[in-house]
Length: 482
Image (cartoon, rainbow, N blue to C red; front, side, top):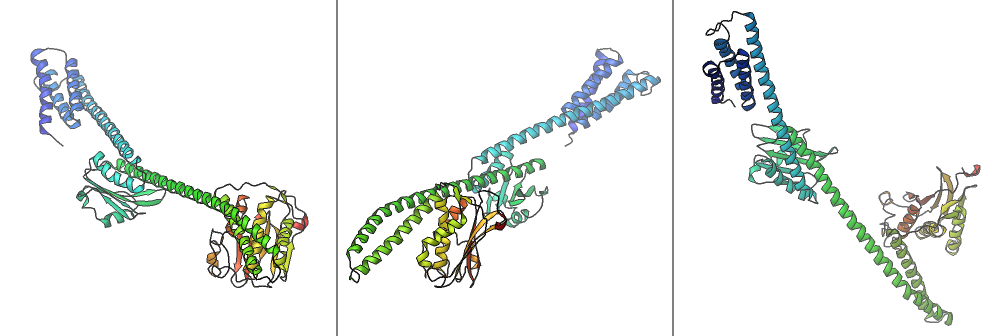
């Protein structure tokens, strides 16, 4: 802003220097010129280029009139004096420009320092917040306090929440904030003293913010946007980590409780099983209570299996499944399971397709039997009596793949990914067939503990085929196994 009194003061300073050397001190022209230059530099440093330029012109005229011969006129006879006068004027103006530029840069550096301090205070105030909502609420109040804005508003898209400092943000409507989240860049409206900008992190839009003047510089506004995006993302990551840790601890507690409960149940079950077996041995066939004792014996076996499944599931959930890997034959696994289910498979056509020359697999022989056993048990349970069961072991893509197929109703497409979840049972069979929904979840946990995968393929009405893959102990495979 132009201030006339500064121009008057600058001219007065030049006049004072000229009067000093005309009336009080009589020195050579070089001393006068240097003194005038010093005065002009002081004016430039103190007030600016415009005042210094005006002082330079007045000083040049005064120097010509009072000190260059012929004195008392603006006429110059000696060409050397013209050179001196022009050099004086150029030097005065150039020095003024350099001084003003240095002062401006110093002011800019100071402003950047102050803005950096404000940004630090802003981030420091938000860093203590642990959730995105808390971070945003702290931001809208802190940015007003730190940068001296009249008001601030923030639209957080994931939570569909708008936070304002108060009635000062009335010029910014909810629609303005929603629209600002969609625009590509910062928008400044100097007439309204308003800045709106989207807030993004990693290409993902978090929302938008609005500041009402007085506004910081555009550079600082962009820095504020970047910092608030990073801080909100940090708070979101901390919140997610807290939830994940709480979920992990909850799962660990549930697993420990299930493990403890299952072990406590097995003790009385063992006593019940021993007692009922003893009673059955003393009862004659056809005895009135023998049928009741047989039911107790069967249900005790069922509860024993349920307790064993619960303990196994708890071990998997708690990450306490320790593998004792050894060399195992895929054919041996299949034949061992078929031997266990020989009575149940009587009257069922069973087709075996085991490729020749398959290498042995690296697995825990006790644990890896359970998934194959579960496949065969499911095929018996969910397919019509007398329908065929197909069991295969093939070499595919560098893995040994064991599959068990049935001719049951199959699994619907939307259930194939959920069928391996804990306690999940197919919609069609959950009320018709006994089960806990843990068998396939246990099988999945065991297979994945071996670093392999388990999956199902099915056509509704045509049956289902369950597969698991195992890594060979050696990649040397006989030609017939490929």
